[in-house]
Length: 561
Image (cartoon, rainbow, N blue to C red; front, side):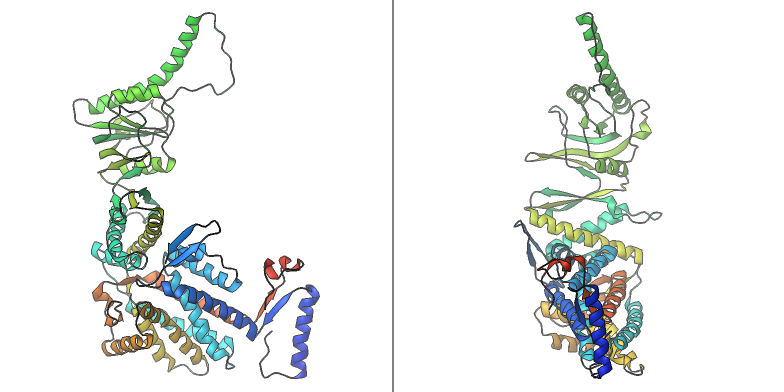
């Protein structure tokens, strides 16, 4: 529906009038933005969101403080958290935010880069479109440039054996952009060791097998990996031991408490002795269940230094707890379902729904079980298991803000390591890929005929936004840094990135700075698609039901200007 700026003939004006009249006939309160106005709306939204996010990029990025309507404060520099927590009303900005958060859902990282790249693509394209170049020509150039960028990505990627040291570098590159350097280094080891502990050659990595537990205690660098399970409840009998060594673990879902009948019933007694007999029979029913557990414990532990732990999903009444305590058993009742599922994965054994057929091969094993009391809360640690398929990262911190910040970062670190293991390849970081892709696309542009080469040029220049912002956030001059990096790349033909400590060029491969291959690949695909779609929008119509309400603009807000 867009008309060329030079088309001022009577036919052109009348066609424009017919279109507007048609929309207004359908909805008298409809608002329409078309051609240059529609593109300006999209470009302004993309660049506005870019300006909000650009200061967060990289290890030297700054924080954002989000204040909710209830007054809750959240301080973060994680792009995914920011976009989820911020209330974005502009439809185009909201679309870009959803695309960026989808990038995080798919690959676990790249949210901020996504917003920056889309905004810069529209900014570079707007330079040519404002001079009369049709957006379709620009998008065709984008597609040609994207193909070359993907080739550049395959050229710079490093196919390596993913050993522990390399994975720690990958995790550190992700975590140091969200946490301070000392904590990021510690957390990198925790994250890598957690995934290597549950990694099986025959099964795909499942991040849900890494349980994340929080404890408001000590400092953030005391966060630790527990190769086992940490449960947020403890024993409910004062005489039960607080620590066990070489413990057999029985996981069960059996009621060990006095129960009422499932239907409403009445009992009539002739004598008090009959009532006592019935009460004893009901008690004996539960005692027999407990006795079967005690018999198994005696069979496995008597004459040895082995001990016994019972974790029950249902209740255990005081009488049963007393019987178990006398035998030196730690018994946990009403355990959470997620703990029950992870316990058998961590310790082995089988979860039992009945005590009638208990056998030794249904028991798990833990080298150490102990209780930690923190204020009014109890935590039970099950450690030193033989071959855990599930482990726990125990986050410690002095306050809720620190714990939440670490928790958000750990999710990204786990995804970064998982991506590297599954891709079996990594990409040099610190802006190295963008410099290499810019050089390759610029060289390719010489062979492109016609006006499409302007779209290719816009795409190549847009890629440089990542190293430019890294330099700006680190306190260096953008142009000075870009000249250094591009000259170094031309001289060495090796992927070269920015050293944020000195402002000079460095080789990320030697410095151990790596990005995920799939993150960069997804970034190129999604940013190119969304930027192209937004460029090709030549009309924005707001004629929804909300705009029919008296005194309100489209979608319940103020009228669009």
